[in-house]
Length: 472
Image (cartoon, rainbow, N blue to C red):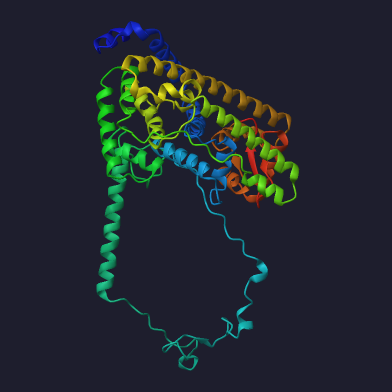
């Protein structure tokens, strides 16, 4: 039936039938695994994080999972621009998936108790319990104009004019009417429970408003030229998805990757990874030369790996490429009838063939279909392997907690799933996520670190940050 549908669509099936069939079978196996809501929730957070890292590598920026995890905890600090870009990609994917982003709050200012002002009596002010309290009668500018207020005095209540009262009543009535309208709209839209009730509903996926939202979230405001390109991209997607299955996906991507549609494709650009990182500089300034040297050696290895990727054609830079790669899951879901967005393919593109992806607009449609099917099959198989890896990691963490006799081993699975979604924690963030006070959050983090589930990521900042051990 699938082959007959492809033949009816006017495409030469026999030429790339094995690759196309393999990609469809891999997608079906992955969709079956993700049909479980718990598995899908666990996979989605990890997939979005890996998409950000792979997309940054394809754009010529190397960002690790530790950078992203620690950046989400200390977002108010001065972050590297590459980490900020990766966090913006994660925020965009969270928004388009209907997931509420993790709360990020700036640190509260710590006030020294020794700087508290003395009691009012030391400043020459009267004690509030005394009978003679200055009521401020008069203009209040001069102390002599104020008359003392005694307990037997009658105080007249100041009432607002009737016009102000009527305006306030009208404002209250208008607010009640607006609140009722919002409640009715929320009930009609039936939004997912993960989104806040006060958040506006998302546009329909792959519509013009949805594409504009995706562009703004990942690339900032769009000018008139960008809006025209996005409108043309929406037309290309609607026309291509008339074809069945992954043929429609390939047709849509073949049209979106045309060089004349996105002419700003540039040459690869390398970041300055040879310079010492911020952590290395701080470690050296604090008198830790061994740690500084270790961090610099790790950064040098990252620079060598990135240069090798650029030399092999696996890294480049283009603002529109990240946008196209980010909307691929919704194209796959609409073309193949999936309930949830499909997997992202930046990792498969980086592993399998960036040149095939980059040269999509210059090759024929049938040749690109064969290349894309190989990339998709590799990506779908990698996602299923990643699910197996996450399940093995959860089992290993749970075994460590039970052998280490952690205090909360009975609720270990819930805590460990939270560590997959948010791998880095400090005392404040862990307490917010688990509903614990500061001291109990410190005890829980210490237990997880003692069992080997967490490790201390850095000790050079004002508060310790713990990272999930073994999550790569």
